[in-house]
Structures are given as C-alpha cells and as structure tokens.
Length: 296
Ligand SMILES: O=c1[nH]c(=O)c2[nH]c(=O)[nH]c2[nH]1
Image (cartoon, rainbow, N blue to C red; front, side, top):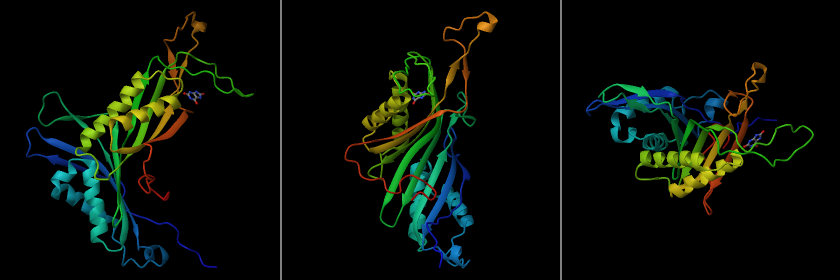
C-alpha cells in the first residue's frame, strides 16, 4: 500500500525586519516579524527530494527584506505589506498556488519630544495575516497580549454545581485577561486606513471591557465582539481568546489583619480559557483566513 502526502506547506518564519524612514523629520520606524508559508505544486521536495520547484526559504527572507526597501508605501502598514508580499509569491512563482504572509508589528513610542529615540510600546502586539490564491484574498488583522484588568463591576454566580464544585459565588471580583483577537475583513481590500481601523477596534474592545458590567467573562467577550462589529463595518467576524487571569483574595487573618477586597494573589496558572467568535449576520465563510499551519 502506498502512502500519500497530505497537506504540506513551507516557508521562512519570523523574519525580523526593521524599516526606518530617515527622510522624514522626525524619523519613523516600523518593526516587523514576518512569516511566509506557501503551498501549491511543490510536493516533489517532500516525496523525492527533487527541489526543482522549491523556492528557497532563504529567497523568501531576501524578498521580505528587499521589499521593505523597495515598497516604502506598502511597508508602512502591516496589512498592505503582507498583501504585496503574498501577491508577489503567487504571481511570480508558477508552482506556488497559495501564500500566507503573517506579520507581528511592534509599536515604538517616541521618547518625549525627541526626534529619533523611542521606547518599545508594551501595550499590545499588532498582528495580521494575508492569504492569497490566484484569484482570492483573505485579510485578517489582530492583536495579542492586550492585558486589561478591572477592579470591580464583575460578578460570577448562579453557575451549575456538581460534586466537585467548590467555587464560592461572587458579586464583586477582579476581572483580568490578556486578549488575543483576530478579525476578518470583507471585502479583502479592507478599510482605507488600516492603522485607523486597528485603533478603532482596540478602542471598541477596551471601552467595552471597561464599561460592561460583567456576569461572566464569556458574556464580556461577546459584548466586546459585538462592539467591534458595530465600530468597524468592514469586519465580518472576530475571534477572541481570553484567559481568565484569576486573582484570589488572600486570607491575612493569621497576621491579625482583615482583607476587605484589597490584597490578592495574582495566579498565573491554571487559568480559565474563554474563547468565542462573534459574527455579523449574513457574513460569508472565512475559508482559509485563519489557522496557520496544517489546519486548512
Ligand atoms: O467568568 C467566568 N467564567 C467561568 O466559566 C468561570 N469558571 C470559574 O471557575 N470562574 C469563572 N469565571
């Protein structure tokens, strides 16, 4: 019995490229981590080691670096840079049928009034992913590591109880999470201004986290997704992954101290992991828009 090669893809991962705009005063900087993955009529390298159809991952890295120089307009916004790169691989290398370009973008804040010194902004990492076939394109934007916390306005009670349920119900707790999100744009050309669109989504997420009276992190997740769909008309759906970063009230009675909701242990694991997709009614199917790796 023969063996078959299933889904296969390859590419250069985590190309760290920094692009300066020195011709502007003050200087500007973009800081990216770019990953490329291609698939198509490329199986012989797996099956026989015949590399005649294999575009080297080294060439992919070179392409990313060269385009950072030659495509100054596109490189300013990660979604545009990913679109240009993905299109390039599909249009110029015949055996490549589909290209995915994923970018993590690290922000830099200008140091107080200084024209060419920065501090890395730690608030979140901006992400995007573009999948390009010969005639279709899927664009998602996203973020990770957006850590948010509220000190009240969060309850959790009325839950199902079984023989192992010991959690006391609460009407006032800390609610904290680190948001990972990806949202899919339709049409793929996206908004006029990807940066402004990203800011609008981050605002919708944070404003809703802050303002929503939470009965469960699940409920807050859905409210945050709804707010994004209301704020960004070109977003067809958003996928959210939110760990419940538990804060446990400490018992200080051994030291003769009360603790009226003031001192907590910030536990790092285990954590509840709350996830969900919020879709616009009537939105189409996202196809290969998400799930890097072998999931599609
Ligand atoms: O918001 C919450 N959702 C849960 O599903 C859950 N489970 C739990 O132990 N604490 C919480 N909090």
